[in-house]
Length: 118
Length: 118
DNA sequence: ATTGAATGCAACCTCAGAGTTGCACATCAC
DNA sequence: GTGATGTGCAACTCTGAGGTTGCATTCAAT
Image 1 (cartoon, rainbow over the protein chains, first blue to last red):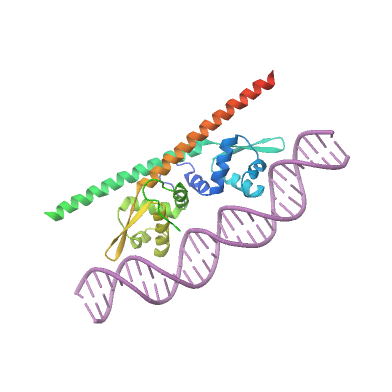
Image 2 (image 1 turned 90 degrees about the vertical axis):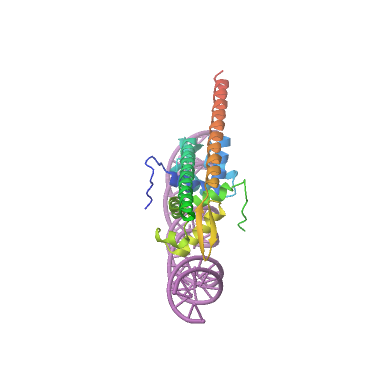
C-alpha cells in the first residue's frame, strides 16, 4: 500500500524510516567522522550491543545510506551521501508543493470572501 | 512533555519521526490538497478511525508540520511548510557535511598510501 | 593445526505506538 | 428547551521495532 506519487521517488520511505531512529543517526555521524569502520568498532561508540549496531546498519544499508565492504574477515561500513541528498531534494520539492497549494487555496478563499462581501 | 519550540529550532528529531509513518504522510498530502479541514473529514479519506487521525494530527502538530484552529465546535487543520522546509535544509547540509568528511578521509588515506609506498 | 578474534544467525524479551471502542462533553439547528 | 452532530478523553488490544544473549562459523596468525 505504499504508493508514491512522484515517479522517481527512490526509497524516500525507507530513508525517512531509517533516519527516524536517533541511534541510527548517531551511527551515521560516527561513520561520517571515521570513514570506514566495522560494526564492532562502531559499537564501542554507542550505548548498545554490537548485534543492535549490526541490525541498525542493515536498516541503513537497505535505505542506501551506508554500504558494507567485506575485507578479509571483517566488514567495513561507510556512509553514502547520495540517498540522503535525494531525500533532501524530495523534501524540499514537497515543501514547495505545499507552499504552492496553500497559496492557491488562500487565493480561492480571498476570492470567495470578496464574493460574499458584495 | 511535548513542548513546542516556537519560531526557529524545528526539532528535526520530531519532524523525522512524524514523517516516518506512511499514514501521517498521507494525511499531510490530504491536508495540502484540501487546505483547512477537520479530523473527521480527513478520516473519510484514510483507512483508519477518526481517533487514530486525531492522534496522528497531534504528532504532526507537535512536530510543527500542521496547526489546528478551533472554529466553533470543530477544529480546522492546515499544513505548515516551514518545519518541512527547515528539515529539508538540515538534511541537505548534513549530506554536504558527509561529502566533505568523506573527501577529507579519502585524501588522508591516499596520503598514507603514499607514505607506505616509500 | 590450534587458538583467538571477528562476524553471522537465531531465539527470546520488552515496550512504545498505531489502532480500536465506548462514552462524556460541547456546540449548532430547530 | 431538545435533538443531532462533532470533538475530547480514557481504557484496552496488539503488532513490530529495538535490544539482548548465546552459540556457530569464518578467517588470520603463530
